[in-house]
Image (cartoon, rainbow, N blue to C red; front, side, top):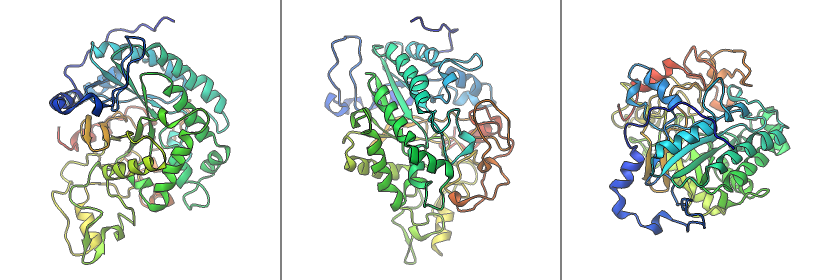
Length: 463
């Protein structure tokens, strides 16, 4: 099959922090710690590794890069790697003259230039997608699992197989954002239940679709699957933590999928929770009152994504996942810098004052997820930044909207979610707090210049 031709794009100006960091610590890395597998009989096939991000550059999407560079100050981050989102069937071939999957893969091979490179692709088109968030609903109805398999996953897998023997290409596939966690927290009899999530739990098509994606994509030799695992402000409570791990294992062993199809999990995808909270800990106590009892923490066992990801990794292993699975953290919009960022712990007068004065997370509530006011770019993409963490990644491209702040007719299957409306006063899923969303936002995935500028201004570490 001939590959779609496209004009040449500007190559990267530098090696990413992934490669640089890996080279700096290369003396400590051995084949055994990398988990190198034997290459197959084809000498052109890259041997699988334990962490695909180590020793590799990461793909820069030239379409996003051009949009970022066109913004005032955007050139500072225009060469950062971001995810390529396949959020509908048409995106596989390209929408409105844009690049399709083959175009991106051809560009990735060019960017690799003879060295290992990770291409990050988001698989995001389940039937009845995002059953608790109307802004990101998709094109497939709740029962259209056959279309998902044949018109979406099979087509993607076939294209990826065309590039399976590209010796320097590693494909990091992020599998179905926000799907499986909804089956734990947003179904009856929970007060946060929605009829759509009840439907998807009853018909089994989230489990069926994710397991099918894992098995089909996992059969491609250079694909590394990472399942979305929500975030600490969603899965961190006791009644969600173990139940989520059990559901993930059930899904990864459903149908033809096995745990060997799972390289790891990703947390905080397209979300805003901080990677670490530097000024307070879940173990702190103020005048005898544990931080867990504060209004903000609300009995959660985690206050940030890194501590959650590391603990959840251990829970996943205990359910039967391989002991070498790794975690990704999306840090694209969780920096919370700017003048409002705390510079030290809050007052120790009472537990709520302490947490409110300490937390760098500037959201009104940890359940707020749409175009959050005050957010900033987070840690730059980096390989192996902490124990059990395969990489910090920018899967959500900064500047792309989470959802429209008002109803906008469209042919993309995207509804209007009041959580994207800055006047909305909330629902049980954010404990009836204001949405904290920016005004004048376009449809999800569309360019949102005002948000991009705010992310630059509030970046932490600063640009």
